[in-house]
Length: 487
Ligand SMILES: Nc1nc2c(ncn2[C@@H]2O[C@H](COP(=O)(O)OP(=O)(O)OP(=O)(O)O)[C@@H](O)[C@H]2O)c(=O)[nH]1
Ligand SMILES: [Mg+2]
Image (cartoon, rainbow, N blue to C red; front, side):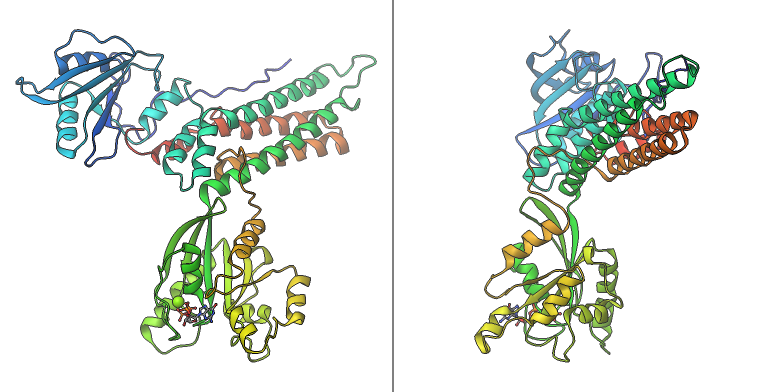
């Protein structure tokens, strides 16, 4: 039987690394792990074979006990004291990186921390590059890629839900799901390879006895489940880019202020108030919204306004979701429907999944005549798969409904035990699903064992990219390069 589990060696040095391997292997690296600035405590972290030795030379001690805090003075070469604080020693492999790790907990503050770091370099450590500690942890099998990414995601989280999901991914929950799938796939490949290698076995026709097909379909279903979880995780991590667009004076800036819960944008009754685009990030119902307020769209001779409108158009093309805000008392005057207005404003009607229509100033409708939003146009909107929400930015009526509709439209459910995920993961899961669909076709339509085996091999390869089993060097470089120094 052929070898089933393909392997790909991890590279021996970190991508982006300024690593200078010496006789003892990798250099000992150091970096400030806490944010630079005023603070009670500042931490410098060292990792590598010389970490313990450097700590001894720095403090004049002969040794540190693993996992015990020791109060010490940190000395310059001439014996003057730089600072005093705690030394913590984690002996490899029982440390974050799997190597010997030293943490120097001195006082926070730029000058002290930089002096201490310079002294550590003098004693032989090298500056760590971005993500190098995490890379070493990955290289020493302390973390897989999903977990390493989860560390960065936890640090960068913009909502409490995103942070707790990242921590769940860090603990290995997401990796476990991927590993279970990998096991299922390997099992499946074993069956198929056996069917190819023993085609003449009597009584058994592995390819057509239905067992392989059933297993394949179960794996496909499982991939879809994980994909759905990952999509939620990606929304949780990245949020969505929402652009507020419409005619001047429709109430776009008022809506931004409502959603932000503060007076961020200038609101006046002068049409053309907003000139430049304005960004604000808010978390509503657990979903991070990166909002962009834009200049009202109209023909204009004003140079500044025209530049603003160009910027608005650029933002519109880049939006995940467009909120077309219109003034129910004015913007439909020429008897055009909201969908026609959208077509006029954006040049073409955006896809239904990218457009939410906001009928604003509903308070005025009721105040003046008691008239309601035109039911014919409402019907047209629904029939064509679009959605309209009636709001009043003045009174706040309808805003909650707007947020709920928006969340539903992008398929975001308030998170419960969700796991953080990235576009990279979703892409890999989709490719895996495609390979499995191909395998299914080769099996059921053509009974082509060799081709089924090849598609399954590719599926395993794509899936393995997620945790790092099959990742290429340049991908690793991209992932760890986006980390902060000291992580
Ligand atoms: N009655 C009422 N007035 C509103 C409502 N929303 C906004 N307005 C008023 O409409 C005017 C325009 O509001 P803005 O938020 O500045 O409108 P805009 O779409 O940002 O306008 P530009 O920046 O000029 O494109 C202001 O006088 C607001 O107070 C609403 O729901 N009801
Ligand atoms: Mg405005």
